[in-house]
Length: 610
Ligand code: ZN
Picture 1 (cartoon, rainbow, N blue to C red):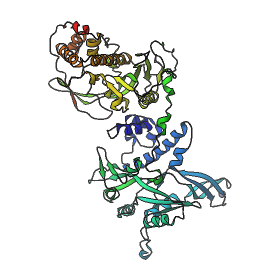
Picture 2: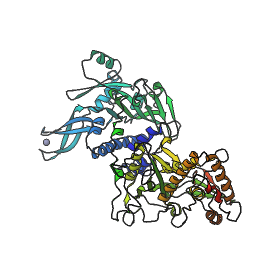
Picture 3: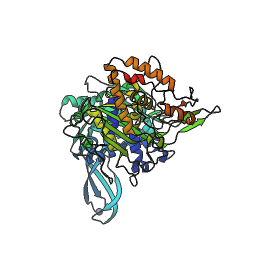
Picture 4: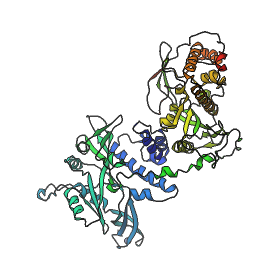
């Protein structure tokens, strides 16, 4: 969740996928037990019930997770929980037991329906603040074990409130037409409430009462503002309802001048809306499921201090495992004293992926194939090389990622990953889990390094990390010739033409991310030479002239691929994020051109820059 939040912030409004978050979420056994995953959810469970359970589950998971992190403090719980002391009294012997009771989410408890035969005694419509007070202070009557009677008895629970949180979460728990009626009352939900805790009681004020108490200044009032809601929308008859979020983003802006900026988030878009519209409900089609109030004292307060206190130590260790430590001429950890990653430091990167679900492909009558849904890919290996310094080109990360999900296709011809490589029991590599591999990249990103690679947007998309453009050098872009062609040149072709190197030669072994990252690094250095010599334009012309003659393939590949012409899952444009249906036609037109291997044009290497 932290990585996802940071990604959203860095993306500054561009859309992000929550694929890693969802991957972790769906791997939690409690999430499936609670029916929070689509495939395990009870078919006719209302969505509002599911989201309320999900909310409770997430808050609890955040608290548990936070406590496990050093320095193991309870700040997260303190921010989210209402602390109480429960006095549980036996109805038989009057023995009283005390125990702490903490609440992450308050389920609203509505007053009972007024009795029909006493219309005059019908109570006035309760205010939201009254309902909230009753819900927070709720006293239960249950049967339970009495320690003194040594048997089950009727127990009554009295709650004394000890502390209130910074973020007050409320599940609306709407069950009856009366509840819906209440929510349909215009202006029933206050945008601001004030809470006073005194003598174990929870006093809640809204509207003119709140104003009065604030002016009087007698009580220490915690003022909350409504910052977000999940709302159940039932827009058409006989259709399943859906959920949207309504969020006031102003309190999380660092600028105190920002006030009341409500946004509607649905499955497809985000649009701004007014607070009047956001807070207006209708019993027939729009009712809230979850409310979030946040202390106004916490508005516009952004704690970014973690950015100054990053612990980079993870970068200095190589994965330890049952296998022998790597040869330091092949893989060498960063030296913490001399090689601290810093802003602007170049690092070459490449990643390999395996398929976790199969692609759906239609073969049409004319023999062309269309990818209906691309495979869902998972990170299998990531390599990061020093991009400068005495060890330039030497990897300091070459992580193989232990995969807990079944792999449907190792894509060995492209990934170089074979069955067993990602299995802790049999792998000949020292495996790391996805979080460790991810965190290293995330640390490098936050330390400001510049990633050098070939076709990096695809890698970053599947790794599920957002890297700002200023921190990316992509050799696809460096060697694009926008005036002449939209074509994206392959790493293999560029390596053959500019470096006179044949890479990715062995179709059985597939790609090697260290080799690919190193090649991208050399190409970047080449590009810099061309720029310094002022010949980049003519070089690009040469590259594209030569490419046209060879169909942009090294001659050896050109010959073999003519016959095989297989679908290439790696080709940019066919990739997609998990679960996103993308319709891209993968054409397989026969390659044209000469059958002859064209001679290598040697003269370009005779340029003065070599
Ligand atoms: Zn008893």
